[in-house]
Every structure is written in structure tokens, then in C-alpha cells.
Length: 198
Ligand code: M6P
Ligand code: ZN
Image (cartoon, rainbow, N blue to C red; front, top):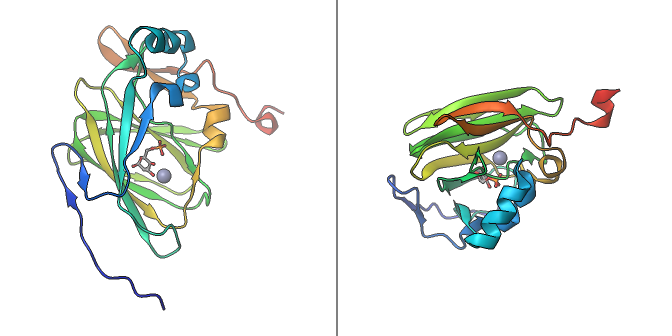
């Protein structure tokens, strides 16, 4: 048995920043412009204001293996691309039957979930809300507020991240601003799997 030493890290509950972390993952608009419904709005932002920081992930350094509980915080900055609110890329777990827990820390947003056969669900997130992502549901977060939306997440060590499925198919619903409030609309870029169409 390879015995690990117990340890702790520090989570700033106001900002969502964990210290120490080995490396902060920073996702900019250029990493995901094709994921927004209005790609020309994304291009305009890149040309006029440069490469906007959308979100940061602070992962506690742990081996990605069965038995571990991986955990990280995400700080999702406020803003929109066209009328669509800033969001994370979103992913399925490679092992689809692995669940995840989200705990809201600061700001407000939405946890958007979707199954492989296109069922959708969402949970409103704010400080103190614990959201459960059951096995088989892809998950993406959206910042619907004016301040950074921060949350803690924990998931089994052998889950793995499958980004490809969401990158090619997208989520069925997107969150856009209409008259100052967030509303769900159908994602014009959503692609149903061919076998579902048949
Ligand atoms: C949460 C967890 C992480 C994930 C991060 C950002 O912290 O679900 O596993 O990496 O959000 O989301 P994504 O990886 O989809 O960009
Ligand atoms: Zn996950």
C-alpha cells in the first residue's frame, strides 16, 4: 500500500481561491469561442478588447486514481459573449457513472446538466447551496450575476474529463440575458447524436 500523508489546503471563502495549488488553470475566450452561440460576438471581443479571461480553476494536487477524492474551486468571471453569459466548457466524466458535488461560495450562477440522450436539468447556485451532479450527467456552470461566481467541487479520482462530447455536440440549452434577466433558450448549435435522430 502506498500510504499518503494527510494534508490540508486553505480556501478563501470570499474569493474561492485555494492555496497552495501547483498550477492554476486559466480558460480564456480564445480557448472556447466556438462554444458560444454567437461566434461573431466572440470574434469581435477578441479583436476589440483582446483575449478575455473567462474562468480560473484551482485544483488541489492529487493523483487521478480510484479511491481519491479530487477537489478544486472554480472562479467564473462575470460577463457575456453577445447575450450569452460566461460559462465553463463543461464535460462528461470519462467513467460516466461517477458523480460530483458542487458547493456555492460566492456570487450566483447556474449549474446546467445534461444526459447523453439529451435530457436537461439545472440548479440555481449561490453561496451555501450544495448541488449534486448524479452519475451520467454532463455539467457546466454559468455566471448569471455581476460579480465572480465561485464554487467548490469534489469528484472521484478515477472519473476523468471527457470534453470532446460537449465540444462537438454542445448543451441543448444556453443561458442568455433578456431584459436584464437570465433565460434559458434552445442552443442553435446543439447537435443531437445521429443515433438519437434515427
Ligand atoms: C469544477 C469541476 C472541475 C472542472 C471545473 C471547470 O471545478 O467540475 O472538474 O475542471 O469545474 O469546468 P470544466 O473542466 O468543464 O472547464
Ligand atoms: Zn466533473
